[in-house]
Length: 575
Image (cartoon, rainbow, N blue to C red; front, side, top):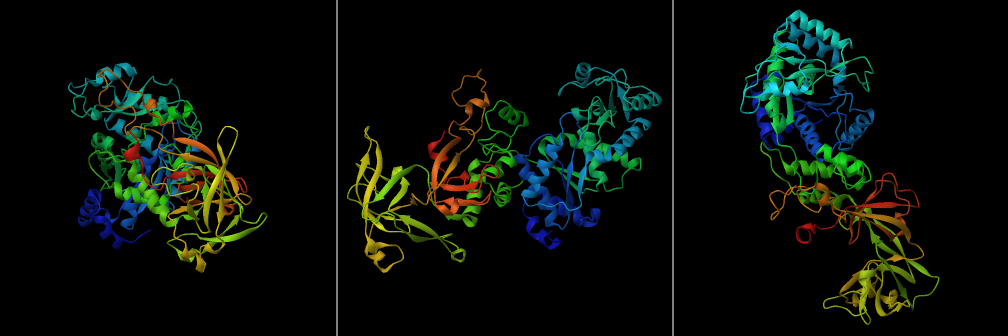
């Protein structure tokens, strides 16, 4: 953790820091800053959660405080230990540590029930027996007030008895619900006697069958914050209308002696809206369940497990969170911003390697058969301290098919009959022709090399050529599967109507899936890539940044995923 003196850096970053600084100057919480990241363990974290994680942990760190990791496991029908484990792994992968502050809402179920019973005794909560349909009808609309439930004036004794029987499991799901008694005529629809406890006969992944009633998220969340002595509860904007209930509930419980003042403060910020992805949990589930992707950790998915498998870096996400900023109003951020953050980090950290993705054989006809020699390539052109690696060169090499044209177009500087090019880190060669199959397809290119032209030798400087090719020695090459991943969607805002669409047209977001989001190739790699560890990242010269797949890549059978291309080509080439 950083120390409080780092607050000067954070203070000017965004409005949340300014609010925190004002609280500190007033002496609230004795200057302490404690935040929390509270995921529900009912799915995998996505890019939007990365922004929230960086914000909550970053703010606490900047002020020398602590950030809690808390699982809001209040809905047993959708929660699983699998999601808990995946969330813990993703937060750790992003580089954050909660220390001793790992909590679960289920740790507090006894106290939450006691809080509910206090509200009943104080006349601030009642058991309602309306059907869900009738409750919606009684609630009113945004322009019309709601009306009181016929069960709103049950006696305190009857409410306590019914709630006790709800807890004991006497009633089927949906028979009764516990509601706060606030104001059915409130202009804020969230204060019209919101539900705070419902019956759920379901097995909980931590508490088993101990409970038959479970708190609503909006009831549980402020209580969790207060129990953990959170000072600043940072939420996305959709919770802004819930803040009056958050404050009302904690005030009632403070009056009942449950929590000391000052109470936690909820602050809302704009959620991440990123082009070319969908972050709706419903849509992500649909992508997985209908087989449009290969699972939650598919590198095309905007989940953190997918991002990690694709080769995105934790440092890149932290840089992205910093550049995206924190706002009080919604806006869109282009995917290119996230991709450029990844490029910036990988350009600095990824060693360079050579891979030929569309192999065509190049035969050096005047090079001795059966002979090979070592050429030397820097591991990182900007970091000479990382040294060099050996690249064997032999009579037969793999080159990119696009590097040869029998009849060159204007400006083509690579291999064509009579042209000279340099084999990167090796010799200058002159193209002498090509070999073809019966259908006229080029099967190999022939050339001759100049023995005194090897890179790094005195004779190299006497050769002036414009073309420079990368290559891999055929007998030494490592054959590997390479997966070229791209954006999952070809349209910036999947599913939204486009200009010119008929007014009645409703677009299906699935129609915007990019058919080229995944392509699998059999590539030829330099031999140093044969036994790299899973999740090793490299820049494949000319092609982009790649990572050894964390699950499928094996020693002597590597599988590489493209993380990002070297440059952003979407602005010009895509819709």
